[in-house]
Image (cartoon, rainbow, N blue to C red; front, side, top):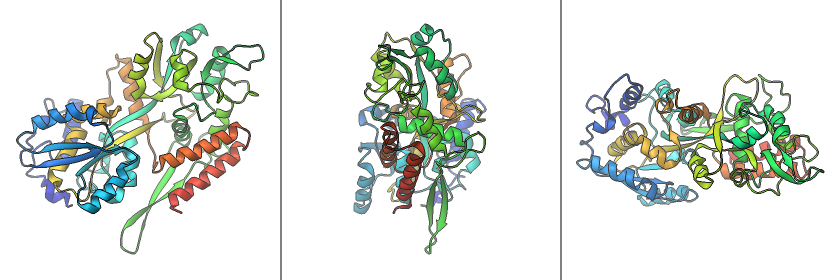
Length: 456
């Protein structure tokens, strides 16, 4: 699709063209008081915009009802829920049958996997610098040489929850800000049921196992992002004989760190650090594979720190209303210059075969930068992907922590999350049972993951 023909920027009013995104940004920041995308004239578009997504229909029902009422004289939006593990295959079948939707709403890895089926937004419509200024840094994975794979809807950053009672009982007033501080905290918080230090009563931080730490792969990737201070998987493009640009990926987990005293591979460094908390021979031992999962232990008041997503906050509040807890930023690797956490990204993208591209693009803008952007972000469980939405008043500590975590969140080209999980499980468990050391586990994981990305 030729976006310049569809958009015809000189004739399209605010809220329809891509410059509406920039204006919306200015409106949020106060530079254009009173601007509201909702009031933009979208009557030139008609018909139905079909969206397929992985979010439950019930979660979007109210948002879509409001949107359709506001646009009763123009186009409407119809949403269909498709399971996350089925949407890629469903798209292939629908495209072949001519029954594909106009837009897809899905986690970023699904967007990356289906990039050849997308109608990219060209950079002459929105410049790369504007894109980076408007949307969170985690959305940089949507930038390609041919344009943007879509526009981000939400970001869900990793944060750290902590039990205030356990910290106070240990004489501690604040949570750690760096990973290495856990060694000091562990010695003051961890408690055993016996003199032989075999049966754990209270644990400090859960690291070093796979089966009972829900986000262990994401925690490892967050630490790699922090140490590397850059992407853990690089992407370049190679032009084939037909003139198509095909992405080529390289796994960078084993690169030495230039800014820290790290001589081994980065993944090896992370795995070695985590092993210290699950190895009974180490002084920092406070966790093992026989214990309940980390969230259960945290809710039971038996784990001082729980690393989870911002989207888990409401559940934790409701699951144990007697739990005296708080949350803060994900700990950082000491001596690094840029604070980083890992964030999951939800994206809204247009398919090449859209039957109603003009209305679809208008809807895409409204749901990512307009009046429905915040409700849609909330429906995904994440925070708004608009940077201006994440800047909270300094007096609101909770909003500041969540908003700032969204701003410092990074993502990476995780095209095969299930396969990365499987490889990470093999690495972590082989180290835990003594079948492999961290160097060998790192080497095996990187080699196998590179084969997957190379399509061999």
